[in-house]
Image (cartoon, rainbow, N blue to C red; front, side, top):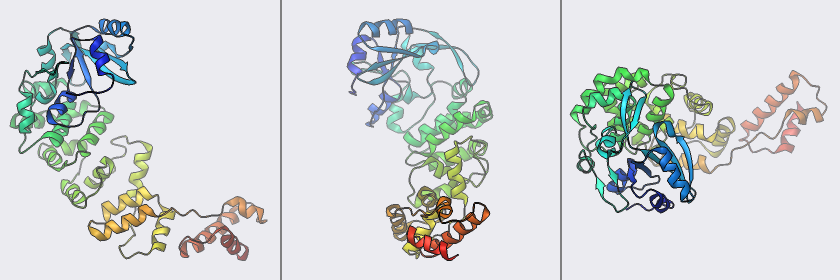
Length: 376
């Protein structure tokens, strides 16, 4: 049974509540559980009143959809009132509250996410989620096509959970429904697509799921021109599980705008797309020159994308990781202090001095660089 600080306080306030969703799934799978969500047959205002009576902070984080966050032992726990869908449009749902646990479970996406558990450890599994979890099957609750039409993000969620929990072949009904409903992805915001795509790609072994995305036509919709074989090559090199690195391996297309990446993410991609000049035989001076021109994260990413695996590349990356980034020791004000007139000449002299510093392996100190400036 899961025991996180604060859970006892929540259950003391809401003894009829149950753990739901991912916490139950991962508990049964023997995986670590970091967050616990609850469901309750009480309405949000009743949940808040109960919590406050027990001295717990209650925050109406999504009260229009039935969700209240209770803070206990410094940790937030989402408590959502049991619901049924009244109306859906592929992105949002209008809900009504209920006290029927099965009705609430029936609106969840997959059988492995539709289980609930009492404080005493009794698991309620209305749709065979435990058996599917043991068999590595990601199966929609009810008719797959109907569940997808309720929220098209479930297409990408299917691939996310298949990447993490799937074993063997995928559920045939799910595959057919995903392929048939993929046009609905156009209704989703770019931010929601990218958030879900990142979760797919950071899975320890995402390749089977990405290949299934290709087969169903979903990959071409979210990442046109993507080539799963390039991701396979990156994984064989032992590259870290970074979503941006993996998506950069999948395609050369300029997807920064398509996925509305953050400024930092877009900048990293620009760096990774530059030519990678480092070679296995490079000495420390060559590595220092590279570090002087590019951030370490850029060079490391380039090495995974355009370099290789094996012991030689591992040693090169270790050397990069352990090397301090050199910084050219002069600035414009240093030249002004020497009497150089403000203007373009300052930039020219600094550039010439930096070239000399780079050619020497980026080890000359400030005094040596000033000596070169005086000689120019």
